[in-house]
Length: 280
Image (cartoon, rainbow, N blue to C red; front, side, top):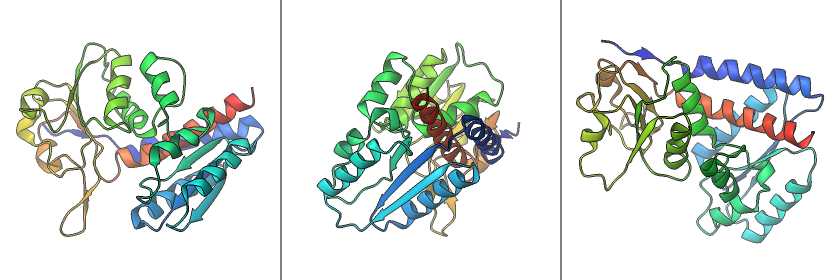
């Protein structure tokens, strides 16, 4: 068996086109403000890609760069001003922040209606209780990738490797809402393979190379690789040992070209959703 590769780039392109159509129909440009503090090279690339995607979809994008010495009070004041700006419907503060800044306080300062990252306690509570709201972009993108396979999730066993607030936990909740039976594994799980070998769907999100190998995968399973790592030769790879796992799985996402493009596409969809809500 050779797995069917889930083309995240192609699927993301379709969602970006949907976001552009939604923006055009809105009669007003959805606005996304992105704040970058410091000079982390990876963050600069992510931010550039997000801004480019906004512009291509006909959104209003506002990129604000600040040096690493920006104070907490200055950052919170800037977020407060963006909360009050009616041309801005989504606010994203790129992580990680310099160590002297409190990421929790920064996230909580964003108005819930503009929390297009879906990271605030309000957004997390809406997800937990099944209320409508803005969902974290990466887990939401993973769900769209799984749905694109045409495999019904009801009754399927899904294993999420990782328990972060940004991916692992919301991923598990979204899978539960789709009526999957969900197991969450993490660094304290004694026998990871015991769980993954029983899974119809595996989502790997720990940021460690070769966390999931072929011997750990049920034949025909859907494998979603959220990890982004860099090998010694500089090449990007995920958490999944791609070359071996693709010979066992039924569907698999590549790195790059899998989850990454979908994260940006879902950020656009969240910004459109926030703009639509603001204009009701």
